[in-house]
Image (cartoon, rainbow, N blue to C red):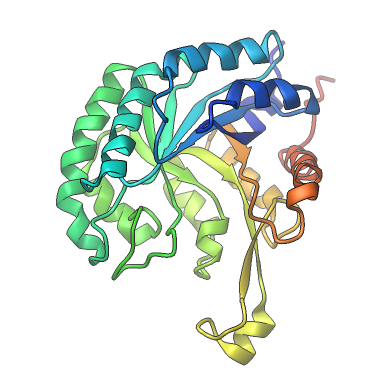
Length: 298
């Protein structure tokens, strides 16, 4: 029988920009990951996305591993050369998602650079209404990651989907059912937002989850505040930060959510470089335990 525990799968992200995604999947496919999210940074570098998808599936072979989501991260709202490549990358990922077996493409909304967030809304509506229709025709959902990329309400680059007040504005502009969120607790915690209540309100719009956590140094905040020279928060690999993933996954299950939680590595200040995969494999087990472990059919 199917495994109800894996209605929520635990996997990891795989960089696809350099053309080595399939090889990396093959390298770590036996480590216990249950899903992968291949992702591109700003550009696909002219890769044949259909062929890449087929190679990624071949690398998985007959293992019980899925690719539900592929990522395309950049700023598709402006008109610099790299922005145009990002927009084309979104189109190519949407058109070829089925070659990966994926039903979701995720990334940033983009932003009108260095302007207040609300000034991006007209261009957001123009670009994403068209892309949402393109995706709907392919049976694909679009998910926006909730990362501010060092921006805020007044200024920034890359993304406007980093704040729940912005989500309200965005989903009013694009009410399409196939536009939602690629959510993670970390990006809320770095702005001292409690992530748990968001799940109860926004679970219906959460299409994909990133496994990334944060450690908040409240002693630093009390002594130095959040604008001083001392770092008050660090992004962490799950299992090393402050989030209660048992509560997060319980709230997702209570909301009827199913899908993949893919670990986003390369941010932890301790478990990085030579310890990167050590940290990711610990996170894999931590998140599997938080979802209840293996299904018991007794």
